[in-house]
Length: 150
Image 1 (cartoon, helix red, strand yellow):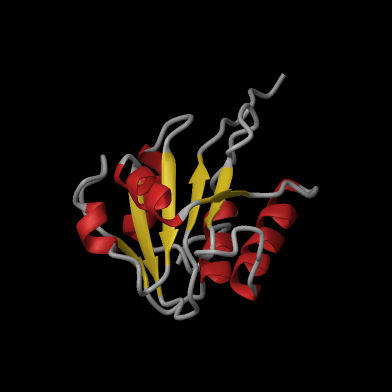
Image 2 (cartoon, rainbow, N blue to C red; image 1 turned 120 degrees about the vertical axis):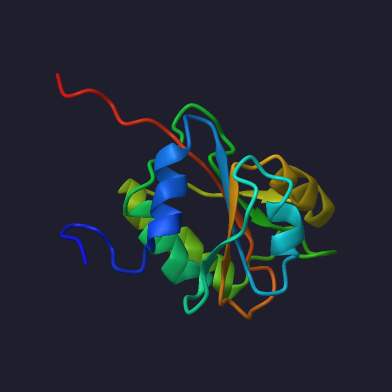
């Protein structure tokens, strides 16, 4: 146990988050996402796990240490529901709440069509699979920067 770190963050996840650079993408996926197959195609190359957490809990923990990109509109995205791209289910609302809390203001995620999300995930730095069993619990976060202390 370390002071100041969310205990839901395991060593492997912390290592990957630390290694990411500005603009790198992180995928937080539900249990139904083809996480292992996609993770093998990412920069990190292996699947990270946060098995006992919902997507919202995992997002809250990750965002306690990961700054979101402030230079782009697609700093965070959610997988759209097939045929209902504007519908935001509860699992996505929970992650949106975690983003807004971490950012200190509302910052809406962009919607990403399902197959476009799969293609984008292959270009990500890493994939974290959660224990989320609700459908469409898949998200993309783009790492931002931490400003210098002036």
